[in-house]
Length: 501
Image 1 (tube, rainbow, N blue to C red):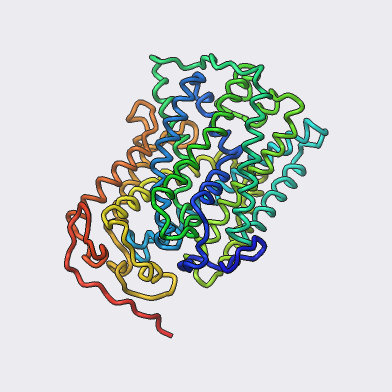
Image 2 (cartoon, rainbow, N blue to C red):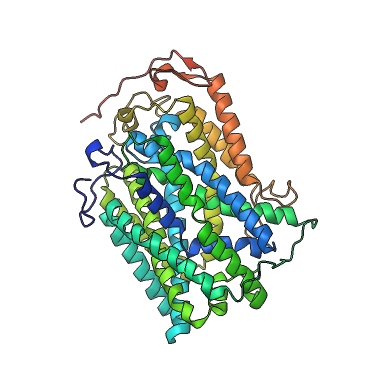
């Protein structure tokens, strides 16, 4: 990306960003990652402990546990961008193979479309609901359709301009949304009761399934950023201390305690004053929030919806276009962003008005994250065993339609990393337990507790290290200092061959 103007359309795709153009700082990564999560969608996730029947204090404990664990899992994924100057899907070529990196690309594509849809729907519903209460705007399908359309088009325009424009939007969003959430303290101070007892007590059969389930839902929010961090951190210079980059990623998620706390505390108020809105069979957090809000807070609610929808939507869709252009290099980043953005907008309207997929897309997002978490573990362990050493030129073999190189492995596939991911993701899906939505064949083995993410993380880590030990990778993939924790084999590596004209 030449220049620094926010109105200059970014032309770089997933090729390595030149050092001269890598002028972002860790604080910029913090702004983008925090801005993308400091939204109504996160507030909805924050309401889940109350929906599961927990008390306020137990819900807060589950939230903090899930948030810290998720941020710790996410933070190392920020290192690949500065190191390789490209996104995380391309960096995964080193561990899954030149062709195997498409796993990361499609995981991020599906995650981005799901969260883009969730952000547009939740923000659009809040905007229309607030305007209906404030000025009597009709709350029919036409109003919702217009709100969704405005959100989606604005997000698409920002994403077409690229990283600088997105960073500008998030600078505003971080401060504005945070201020509006803090303003909520004054709006709900009179109604908030931290002694809210919930419906599930310690000692009940459902307590631990509810507590762990709530923590895992919170944990899924930081994990959902795993495939995207490289999209933004690739503009940070490689010389930046790694601890600062990881700290920015960790703190960006730790700071989301603000919208999580907002969602948790307001959900406890809704449960006490308008319980019909937190019925687990048909929860409606946004409707409940508007029902218990004082009239003067409707405008802040609408502003949170507008700002939050823009912020989450841009962080999701930007990565979508970038990854699509990496899988199909004939598309430029701009062309891929417009193409995927248009398809996403069509999906949003069909899913909301024709197929009623608003609940199904939340389930779909959870399942995608269940598959993404093991991929993240493989990336992190790969980074450790490689001592953080990568060959940027060999990472670009797929994008240049070349063959060979350090990461070619077996016809472009590294079956060690791929096998570890396939087995762990498949097993994790079998342990998913989302009552009324999706329950895997092994979902009831833990007494109703959804342990899919812990199973996926543990199996991926153990199996990947075992495979690396039993079937050593070529010595050349490890660089001058050799491997850490595992052995290397003296297997020859094919030279990079240019594509046939």
